[in-house]
Length: 222
Length: 138
Image 1 (cartoon, rainbow over the protein chains, first blue to last red):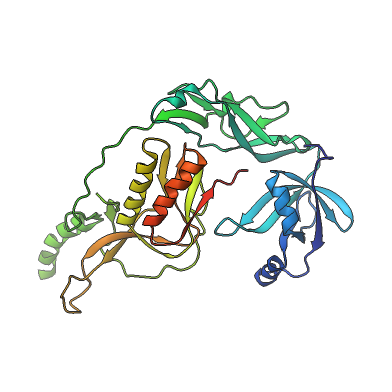
Image 2 (image 1 turned 30 degrees about the vertical axis):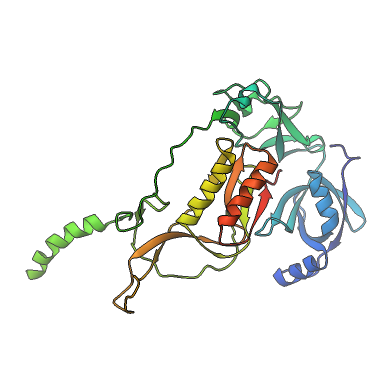
């Protein structure tokens, strides 16, 4: 993403810190945020919630922050969500030089329709949905595409197999599994046993305790 | 066999209360779509199994289903027509403590509409209000 495409986010300084004031801000349509990094002082700010959500939906990593009339490029370092994952609670931004290398998580997009998937019970496993990469701040790719067109049954694609754009290095373990096609075997449904005394878990230390109990009375008598 | 721990430290537990919101296990971590709880309560091993069977039957052999909750709490129940007292009753069933935001089931490898329909069937088996959610991408 170039500097021209960088979305701009206007901010206001946050005067009061704490749960109560942060809650009031959110009720008023603003979000608490903090900027840190580059050895400078941390800045507590507020941003417009609607404007930030629009930026977040574009999967942008870099934003131009307007602090007291001065534009500063920042990286969206962390976004805190509420327990339902529907509202943003707080944003962490870090100061960034556009020429420096940064570590960011970028979404992995699987492209292609492998023939092996047409087999009955075949399932595409892709445990890794984002890749941690190291690249220049001004050239963070929007997503990394992985071609799975020729993926066969029983074979897998790892991080090492991904062709990354120039200047991008993968930080994620090279042997990490990205995609694999496996066949889900039909499981035979076990009949549910009648609930009762038979269906009870083992109690830790109970067997040992009963053994000790057998010896203990003899000691007491002494 | 219903879901239950293999080994426990104590056979019986005090009843306790389920308070607060889910601070972990509250996002889609393994699959592509999930079923999220919006209320607090206890989910019995039978209900979890009923949900699993409902989803599995709907998608048949397609996709991969993940169960994100485990019933680790023994629940005691006094037999019928028994007088009160005489100590705590025997464990009757196992339950999972569920808080708002917890993701109960996840599915991957099926189209969105199939996952949605499967989770509608699962939600009917659940004793709480639930909603369909998707994985949040980076």
